[in-house]
Length: 70
Image (cartoon, rainbow, N blue to C red; front, side):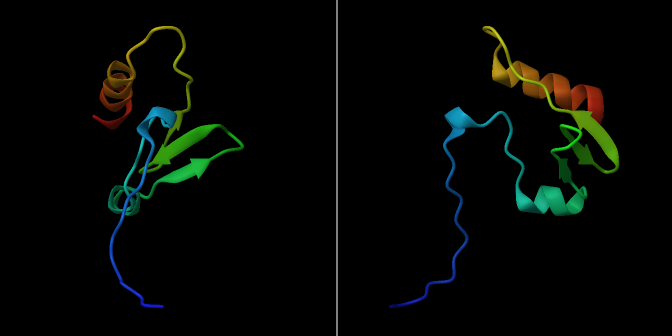
């Protein structure tokens, strides 16, 4: 067969609360800590939370961004 080096992302956005790209993860030294149920960005642990009820996931994303990253 043939090899075709390329960059490709495939994601089903209905199944994910948040998607971080590899460049962002490298720049901000992201660690996924499954034992503590958190994401560590630039050394700051951010607790994972389930979206429950009828909350809009986009609002949730901005709340996390504003609270922990600014």
